[in-house]
View: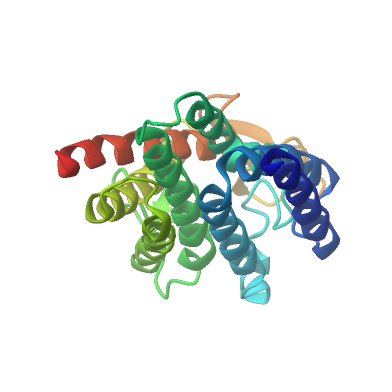
Amino acid sequence: MQLIIGISLGILIAALAWKAGALNRSGAAAAAVSGGLVFGLGGLPWATLLLTFFISSSALSRAFSKRKLALSEKFSKGHQRDWGQVLANGGLGALLVIVHTLLPNEIWPWVAFSGAMAAVNADTWATELGVLNPSAPRLITNGQQVERGTSGAISLWGSLAALGGAMLVGTSAILFRVGAVPIALFGSVILGGLAGSFFDSFLGATVQSIYWCPNCQKETERYPLHLCGTQTIQQRGWPWLDNDWVNFGASVIGALAAVVVYLLLAS
């Protein structure tokens, strides 16, 4: 019965998100599947963390939209998430809830899930609020000042936003605990979230595929066409490592870091 209710809720929330413009059709389909698994197999605790990420990140994506409009040429996609973005942010969570179902007495799947959600939430908050930083951001690798919206750039506002995003998920996680030690869980989720977010920036500055628009003379994540309609040329990075894969990598690091830190704090 819980699985049936969970899948139904997943479909309902995905449909509402598509209706509100937060997801396109492919994103809504992916959200219905992944959300249905998390809601149906994990129940209220797992659903709460997923919704904490989705609602807060979607709200921030719409906030200050006019001020961020000029930077849309930098990012590979807009605020309306497609299936790739949905699976990049929630795919690992769907896998972890399946592991939880197979190993119901183990704590680590819940800790890993919390860390993964904290990582993608921290990264989204950092991206959405970091571009509003008063001064230009700096590359995480060498500290060089770069344009706002540049992949791999970090700022004070972005870092504080990442901390806030991780803390929000950490607070939601300790409301349910699921057998975990509260203080250890809270600390591990926050550190996991920050680790995932900074790892995302590191990949963005080093091996993420970045392109060049010869018409606008600007770097961008967009491929194959820039917003101006010009075909973009790969400038650096691994061709297959787009922003979706970077986000998925951040969720993996967030999950791993949270589990390691939790084991250290709880021992």
